[in-house]
Image 1 (cartoon, rainbow, N blue to C red):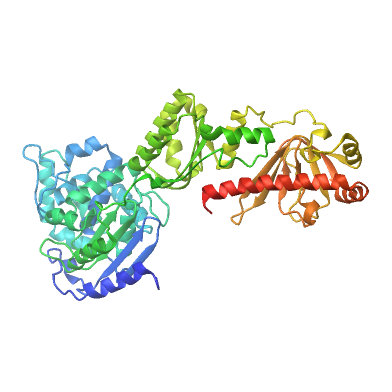
Image 2: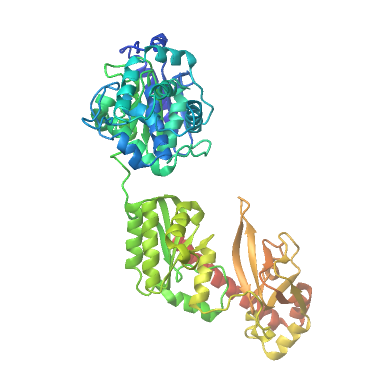
Length: 610
């Protein structure tokens, strides 16, 4: 972390807060009274897995009440929300953590963050035996932390020997049928979950997993299904800090949970998780230094959840039409002019950032407002960071709205937002294959739209062979000159997928396509292939060899069965010496072609602002 602004700030914050000597360690559990007052660690883990830690971040201690939100999440997964809510409420109490706060009549605990609610949720963990339920808790907590966690047996024995109040709570819950059967093994399991040994780093990773919608950002493993994360964070926000919960959410503004061993976790959804450990507690049972650290971090970095980044139309990174940027397929002059005049018929919207209701609503609104004259809309997710269900629902509604109007919505780089495919497949059912059109990149999507706009045939197989007089580079030549050229050309054929020109090969010939199509590609730094152009019947490739004679700078591959007339450069140069007008016209036509490509590139530069 040397030289990191975040790391430097945490070190300075640790140094200052460590000077606070107030507070006392918990003594009602004898094992906790042995803690060193000077232990103090801070860990911060971002939602993409960057770990910052200072101080005693590797010192082990027991998780205590910080286990409660994680067990609550497991209870939601093992049952239904309705079943859990029937036995445990979600209302804050303003009481201390061990208050016997039950609803009058029903005996339902007020929320799962107080001991009564936590014992009830522990009783809802799935398993055929106490040992099986404990194994499930340990395995789930280990997924959150990214390492195997175990029970501190000494602390467990200390809890077991002094936990009479919790046993009384267990029997009260049994009296109201909140727990079923003998409450003793359930309370014992609760003691064990509180005695799981963790470090400050573990807590930060567990918090970051909640921030990352249930996926550990370091290991990539799912610890809790994403749909339950919001429920866990909600009860943490309202009740996680007991009788300090209201002031906490007002000042710090992050869902949090404290434990009497001195730990605190805090979660900023979508951004980060915090873990702080310092045993001295205030009168409410919260870590004195932990409270200060969270307060200062929140104010310094604007981490309050009600201070979110402003969402507006900046979600649209780029917008352009086929008149500005067309695909890499080379078209005839007439087709090129048609595309230039088509304007809004094909529109591309490149998005960026997190796609949620507020940002996707902007995109949908703009696309609908721009739909006059539009036939195809391409939504590009290349720079998107995420897409949630609300955003997916809006895209579904846009897709159906455009389809009903006879327009087509396409998606590119959709692998960056996997939630979209899952959501649309579920909602569209039998219509999914017909309506969900997705391409790896914009170039392929643009070509697909252009072909339908121009009503061009799809080059699965070559069409009839064109006459040599139809080659674009022969424009201006008379029949005699064309005959001289074709007299030195050689007819060659290639099968589909065959490499016609190798990268780095010596340039010895110019190719004229008589039938079929071929694509020019280069290999990017990351190893992927990028299409530069696709040529079809009547077009030529390899003409740069006539100008500089340098080795081939790209690969040319046959897209279909390909028939070419090949003009050896040696024969062309000999013919040029004998008939200079042929050489002059060919070079002039090549120069005009390069001018057209340069103008196309200039238009794209003006759009993309390279």
